[in-house]
Image (cartoon, rainbow, N blue to C red; front, side, top):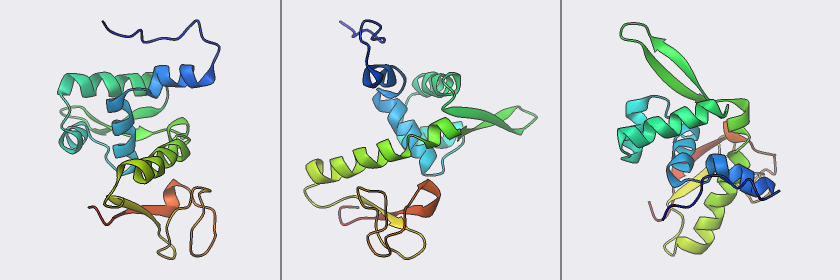
Length: 149
């Protein structure tokens, strides 16, 4: 039996947010977008997701204003998918989930380290650099292989 997609009976912002991003593939599409993936085939290659599932998730993310379709070719017509400001605002939640997973589900160490581009430091739970202390956002960091890569 499938769980309902909506939580209309719950007056809860977490439940409402989960209606939009509370799916494994949706979160992985968003993660890939933060890693610079923009084109449908590249999402599919990176994730190994079925085309129909990816189409559904990208359409939903665009409908919700988390991503937008941007044409990059006219014949045939092709689009890139880019995070909107609303989508970029998910970065702290994604990084918190990554750090939580590293603490609880990475016994050999993190597979990925989010590093500060400016000084090679790492991201702290307060979204600052652990070396120079500056506040960090998505454009200030880059992924690097971790010990369990």
